[in-house]
Image (cartoon, rainbow, N blue to C red; front, side, top):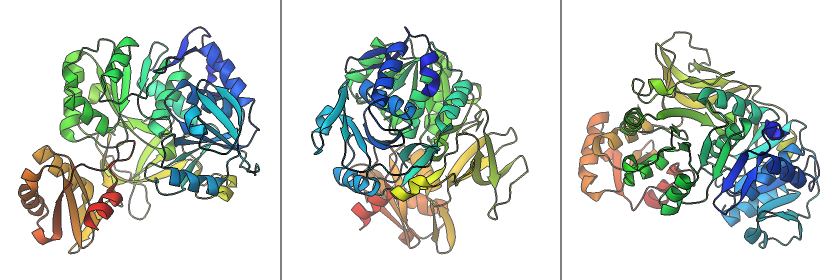
Length: 469
């Protein structure tokens, strides 16, 4: 069965959610198989995901049955959802019971708060190797999907579990949405080793979240940088969390100050801090930094996971062979997906990546073979012909002033968004001084908050459209 869940101890707990459901591996395997029997093989299914047992049963059962789920946030903007339905014409929708009432289709199956709807769309050809589709993190206004092939998810689950040393004793806190590549990776890696997944829909800021992970004895947490910003606002370091043993990070770059803070907290409390790096196109994680290096490799994403290979290329696409080098980071491994889709006809296409993915990230490699992401190839402006990194500018301001910041703009002007009006002049003076460019090339906007998507990533284009016109 998918992820080998039928090979685990049938009486061990597989998943728990904050709606009160608790399923063993035996129950999970049986219920997932039942859900899978309700759908036609090689049909496309929209999964409106929540971090609940019902959502999970559909995912596991449909993949195992040979159908192809498209994972979407259950709270996705309805205009975007309508567009996706029109573009991809799925045969089924798997939705929370309340959301299912929005659609003009009769339910054909129901379990654990979820309903299966058969749409009026005909089943059309899908590539024989296609197993799953996910939206890319930046595509909230686009129908662009990443196409996963059979073997991607299980290879990544196997190798990430090995890299992190996960065992069946883990009780993983899954706060990140399962429609998000890192959230799904947390689920897959732990089910693969027979551990327990603690699914939660509670907000990190709520007392319910912390009560839940204490009650259910959560042993590890994976967060994006924004998650850890919230942790420290809540004075996380002072909390009594005796069962928590591992903190992991993905989904973006921490500031050096936050990285050090987490590494020192882990050392002081006898826990592990494991930074990692991944993309939707590589089934989530492709690299992680061993916990024992966290204090000496500030900002590093470490080395490739087992069965994977990281390497750097220059502007001409040539592999950089020097141990210490900087260039575009690329990855090779069995978790590299097939490519993209922007319409239903693309779902019949074959493997376009062929096991190698160019990330679009600039990175450097140190003498020990550890990698450091330094920016995005696309996140640069040319101001008066000088190449200026938006990511580096952002980090400099955050580290100098300890404030929230986002940098965007165009080749005529950098737009700097901050939330602290008292720092407006100082930030302008600082960034102009650091870059050695005229102040007129920068515009500081004081905004109520930095706009982020549901995974915590900054929405730069939306920021510019909203505030800079």
